[in-house]
Structure formats: C-alpha cells, structure tokens
Length: 454
Image (cartoon, rainbow, N blue to C red; front, side, top):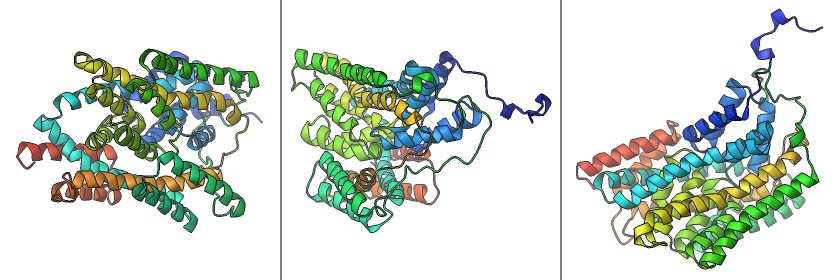
C-alpha cells in the first residue's frame, strides 16, 4: 500500500535536481576548504553530498570510493571527478576534478614565490623551522596509519621490511619496488590466497540519510553505461592531451630541457601513486632532488610543509617542486624567474592529474555496470605493504635532515627533535588534526625566531 502524501517526510522525497552551475559553485567551495588530506577531504564530501545535500546515496558513494582506492593517484580528487561525472556527464567530471585542484595550485604558486623571495626573513624562517619537525612526525604517523590497515600478517610485514631495506640501504628506485611487490602479490595470491586477501577498506553502506538524487536503485544514466566506442574516444582524447603538450615541449625546447623532463617525470609519478601521496614522495625526492637537482633536500621538506598547510591533494607538492626547480634554474632568464616557476607549476600539475581524469572517464562506465563492492587484488595488497616501508624511509630521511642539519658530525638540534616528539604525542595521544598541529608548530617556530632562540 502506498504511503499517503501527508505521512511522507522530506527524507522520503529526493532533493530537487541540481544543475551543472549549482554543482560548479559547490566544487569551487570544496576546492578551498578541502584540508585534512584524503581522509578529511572524503569526510567533507560524504557530509556534504551524502548526509546534507543527498546528491548520492551512501552505497553508491562508497562504491565509487572503492574504485578510486584501487587506482594510482589522489583518491579524493578522483572521487570528486567520479561524482561530478556521474551527475553531469563528462563536463561535470572535468569541472569537479579541476576545481578540486586549481585553488591549491594558485595558492601554492603564491606561497612558493614567498618562500623563494622571502625565505630568509626571520619570521618566515621561523615558521618553517617549526613546521619541518612536525612534518617529520606527520610522515611517521602516516606510515603507522597505513601500516595498521595493511600489515595484517607476517607476509605483509616482510614485504614492508624488504621495501624499507631496498630503498634505504640499496637506493633501489621506487618503480622497481612497486613492480617487485606487484609480482610477489600476483604469485602469492595464487599460492597463499588467504595471506594476500584484502579489501578496499570500506565497509558496505549501513546507513540511510533519506532518498537521494542518485539512490541505491537509481538506474545507471545513459552516459554512464559502458560503450566500446566511448572508451576508445576517451583513450584517444587522453592520449592527444598528453602527446600534444609533450610534443610541443620536445620540439620547441628539446628533450633534455627542464620543462620537457618535468613533464615526462611527473607523468611517470602520476602512475606510481598507489597508497597516496606519501608513497610517491620518495620517488619524487629521488628524481627531483637526487637525479635532476631541481631542489635541495631542505627545500623538499619545506615543500611538503606547504602542501600540508594548503587545501587540495597533498600530491600538489609537485607544483612547489616545479616552481622552485624552474625559478632557481632561471629557465627563462633571471628577469622572468617567476613566469618560469608559475608555468612549470601549472605544467607539472597538468601531467600529474591528467591520468586521474582518464581513469575515471574511461573506467567509470565499467564500474557502474555493477554496484557490488570492489576488492583489492593481491598485487595491490602487496604494493600497499611495500608502501609502508617506503614511507618509513621517507620519515627517516626527513628526521636526518631536520634533527642533524649539519650531518651526524654536527650536533643534534634538540629543539627540532622535541617539536617532532610533541607532534607525535599530539597526533597519537590527543588525535589532534594535522592542520591544528601545523598551526601550533608554526607559531612556536615564529616565537623562537623572534626571541632569538634560533
């Protein structure tokens, strides 16, 4: 028997359909408030889109998230792209994904310029002095957070330990570690399936927040249905969007030019970000600092500090790397250093995020063909375990450069070490947000600078 209209509540009725322009303003707002890393960004989207606005149901939201968790790249930005695409076709996905990134790009260009131009000013130097030890602790906390989910048996612990030794003691390139872990996972999944069985880490939906525009049983929109022709078009356009700028850079500047090498390097980085931004940072460090010399180890740590304090994906630290590399090397000459830096930041952002858009626009229809939960494959389980060891190595690298700025032959900077210890206590014992911790340590560093302790 149908429910009388008088007995129906607002939650029983789906919200009024949302236009692309209305969605535009929401995605723009999200781009400016998406602090807190992937977990915080996903939580904001869940609260806004599932609970408050009811644009999509809990089950469909988690289904999309599970797919994004399987992909290389920033899962929160990919989730925004997916939801925008599901609601408003291709342009909806492009708008959602781009606005998730663009605010942080412009903010980081400005902050990177301030860092390069005024980094020696005592107040600015004090801010970075306070933030860097906190970042060291934050990276270690990230390793613990990922490890607590990934290292569920001795096999996973062994893979994590081996990856740490490989990158720390033998300087094995990050792509080799990822490939080796994938092979181990593939073989191990066949021989010991119980040991390499994992999931996307998100339980099935159990709550309902009322009828949604895209509800559990809403038929898949026409544009979200799989089509070989559509898939071919997306792949062709995506290849064109990569080949044209890369071809122009190579033809006009040469293959060995800084801009061309940045485009090629960050394309590879975009395809290796299994496990989030913390996992790919060692690879970025190996290339940007060790191989190309675009920036120094200290600048790399400062860049991560800036990335932690701005909205948007943490992988946006690549914009800082691009800006500093082109600015310091004066690619266009000393008088156009800022132009070179800003262009490089935009360029590396393009090559870093282009694959994310392609994964969603090409793979979304395949995902929408079923509403069952997706599972991690055995190779991805092994890769995630390896990522834990790589992140621990990153924390060791940061600790060395922050606590012993003059090397082991110099003295321990006990103030920096103390700030790291306090940060760990704040994160583990009091569960403070990263943004609050960074704000407090920046203020502490400023005070130490102003009162002459540095």
